[in-house]
Length: 165
Image (cartoon, rainbow, N blue to C red; front, side):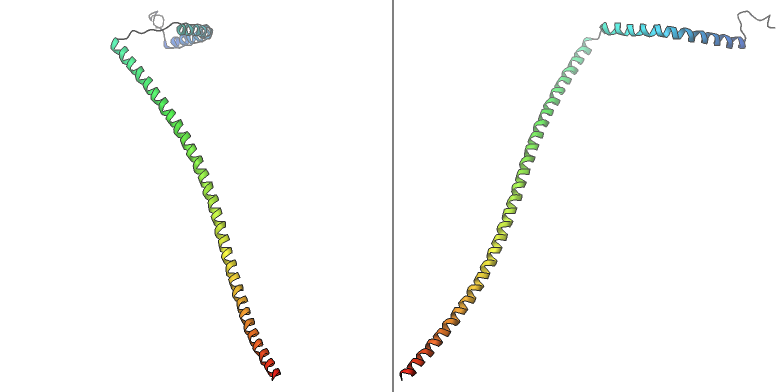
């Protein structure tokens, strides 16, 4: 039956063998071709980069794209303006933070001075109270000494009168 089959009709085993042969020869030739092809592709890319590419568009599309470019420029300007404002605000914030730190330091210094003044005042009050107590005791001693002196003076006068009589 094999001999009677059509000459252009191949058997399935013959098809597999032929496919393997084609694949092997294709892989051998593809490695050599790929090296040459890669160089050609790189050269083609360089040529494409050198050649300007132009596409024809309608006038409406061109005006629309121009308007979009203008919008992009205005947005970029707005972004730049906002960035400048942010920089200014950051500078003001750092300046205000510095002032606040200085004022906090002044407040701490004033609180320390006030605390020292209060402690000095309390110390002066305590010293004044001690001096007042000392004055009272000295005054009492003086009064008792005066009473005693008056008593002794009276006794001396009595003794002098008795001696005269």
